[in-house]
Image (cartoon, rainbow, N blue to C red; front, side, top):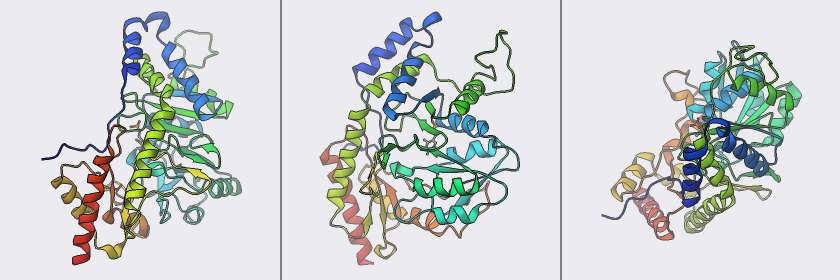
Length: 373
Ligand SMILES: *Cc1c(COP(=O)(O)O)cnc(C)c1O
């Protein structure tokens, strides 16, 4: 059988190993924050933002950012039904209610018309998640936010490398969150980042992130409020420093893999891949293929065909409102319909063009079988 093709796997070089070794050997005592500070500075520079706080996860960054905005019991936060649970869980943990709306057919991100229709007197914020590296319509969402007095925040965990009208994803809303989980474009194993240009929000999150201890509090061990503990470690940050140094290269490789898929799939009119508007850059974290309903291609057939070829392909996100802990919103037609005729394609940095051709070969075969039925 042919070698297994993984859907994602980090790109680790001697540089990451060197920094991690140094952190393990020397990064203690007085030096226990050195890589963390350096990591935050480098990430700020990459993104073009004023403030950054490294965290243990994107989920933690979102939890603190939403808490800092005052999201609490009785509030509602609007987000797309097409999402990973990590974007919704912090809303629930804060006692607020996630309100799931449908997505756009091409970007699989929030439909601004549906967002505005979902606003109530309880709405506190709009959470724009740039799914699979595709960009939300930020101008429309920011205009809706301004009109109704709501914060627009960005979960850019999947959108490192994505740019909206010259601005990097995550740098546009009230705050942005990132994930450095092992499946993401850049990794620290587990880890995350909150970024913002809002000084007051930054100070609030900084205090929250240190168990409620303000940095200007002169009394030792004196929390002023009940905060959180979502810090990154110096060893993880050391890996992050190496990954940020290599970030342009990591993004370029993701985009190259995406461009290859686009080229190899261009002749198959039944398949749509991630969009890239003329004034946007797609960071291409997760190239995905969505098939037309008429093609007869189903998720189950795709999964079986990829498994038979020893290829690790992932299912498109189930609508969050289909999960047992939420109310079903079947009127979110696209979010409910697309996953049944879609698949995420393998895209780890070190895959070869021959690997990609194998993936596309499976797609072509499934399409032929679909046409025959
Ligand atoms: C991966 C991911 C997260 C969760 O990140 P963690 O670092 O694992 O908490 C959150 N939101 C989105 C959109 C993600 O893709």
